[in-house]
Image 1 (tube, rainbow, N blue to C red):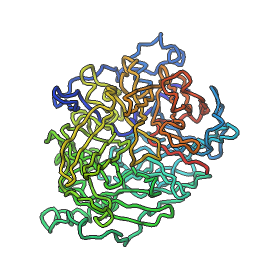
Image 2: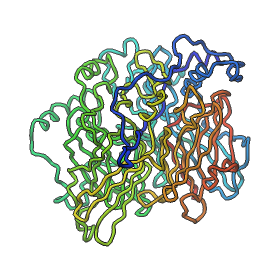
Image 3: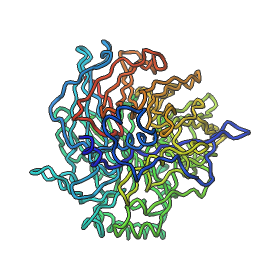
Image 4: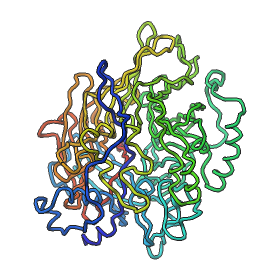
Amino acid sequence: MLAKACHNITTPPKFPPAVKLPQAAATTSQVSFPSRHVSRAISIPTTTITPPTPEILASPELLDDRVTAYWDYQFLFVSQRSEAAEPVALRVVEGAIPADFPSGTYYLTGPGLFTDDHGSTVHPLDGHGYLRTFGIDGETGKVTFMARYIETEAQAEERDPETGQWRFTHRGPFSVLKGENMVGNTKVMKNVANTSVLHWGGRLFCLWEGGDPYEIDSGSLDTVGKFKLIAGGHESTSAPSDLETGKFTADFWDVAAQILKPILYGVFKMPPKRFLSHYKIDARRNRLLIASCNAEDMLLPRSNFTFYELDANFKLLHQQEFNIPDHLMIHDWAFTDSNYILFGNRIKLDVPGSMTAVCGLSPMISALSVNPSKQTSPIYLLPRFPRSETDNVVQRDWKIPIEAPSQMWVLHVGNAFEDRDESGNVEIQIQASGCSYQWFNFQKMFGYDWQSGKLDPAMMNRGEGEDKLLPHLVQVSIRLDRNGDSQNVAVNELNEWGKAADFPAIHPDYSGRKSSCVYAATSSGSRQALPHFPFDTVVKLNTADKSTHTWSAGRRRFIGEPVFVPKGTKHDEDDGYLLVVEYAVATQRCYLVVLDAKQIGKSKAMVARAEVPRHLNFPLGFHGFWAPSK
């Protein structure tokens, strides 16, 4: 069985490489990102290794750590074709579900299938969406598990319902297919609904970076179908005068956009508005905040972002569009009471790459590359509301970004909030993850090689001295005077936590509000061959008292994104539990781990561990969502 599993291993990577910070500057506490050439990574053999036997895998002392490191990495991305359409009771193998744990469901999405039955292997980001759910009954302490593939249009075309065999026909943005589906393949927009999951207004959705979300029946996990979050023809509810600046007169790029639209919309089937997979929930206003960008802007030196705010009945309450004269790629973003906040990850068109991409000879993403031409990072503060709704507040010119002194590529944002004093001065704090432009590479995310279909863990594990290139946690501080002029911008390692980390999370009630507790996935650094990734540790950072506490899964056990579950009626930032999936690759098991947020760093931090049956062992997930029953 093991040999068969190893044979089917695709080598897909994990979620977007986060962003990291380098060493503090000599005269300030700012983080600076190395701009030197990246040298060789940790040596991990990949081409001449044969699958180890079960006995060797279970006995680390019998196998060199470099060899186990390679296979442990691969085992995180083994396709799982089985589904659990009915709830499966999980055995709590350690501890017990606490009596005060609120009843509800933890939804986790991510790719489930990477290799078809005809020789093609796709990038993890192009893997078909596989929704996993953990139902927790706080009264009985029972845990149940379900897992279903999301029946997207691509999934329906690529899977034979009679035989159960798969034949990939959609290349997706990050992959190249084998055989007759390679050259001239225009099926780029493979909406696999594998990136994030949302429960809002009593409805469940799975999202992907670049298309409409898919609605899922929360009970059966049947796919309902595509859901139009924003129907056509909606007008903004805000006053158009001040916030419609940024609309430029017709010029060369307007003409270029008109030429590109019929090609992108018609030939490549790209939707005019591509929704970002990351959304935000304004708990204080009880609003869902989502964002979209224009398809043609992927190839033009400008960016159009539209933000929408909806109530619990999906009524559109607010809409704003911002046209930014810079070529940007945004995966995650933030909001405060007054602003939407975008970190401007700068990109540029790769002309040779775009030619091979259009022909199907390389991934579509090879048409783009990072643009490290500037040593600063633009941060756009985009006003949420017109002036009439923000009394006595002077709005700055949003078209002029705040330039952070460190060049960093930001992927995930934990939180952002602002504090305004009596004089009108504003201080904005942003907690995020960031990495170096010199490390981030569209075509090599997670070490994936699209030509061979292999995954090299060395990409995610740089050698000594280069670990600062990797994803790290950062705190960005911005001070503005009452006129909106920038007085100071600082970028620092969050609580001086210098280890690679990503997926910052907070108590959901504090989103957009002042907060001090940040939880994230990080690495203990205890494994020589895999010192930085995959993550094996949850870190809790308190920015108020600068304390840092950790919980580690243990040897050859990895974790994904932590999700906070509030309990009771209290609103302390650590008054609740953390849910995290543990991937015990040595034994090919998955576990749902429940951690007491207040006890992180202490021996009693882990309160329960529930085991998923081996035949339902699943690949590394991306993002999750906790939905309480009440």
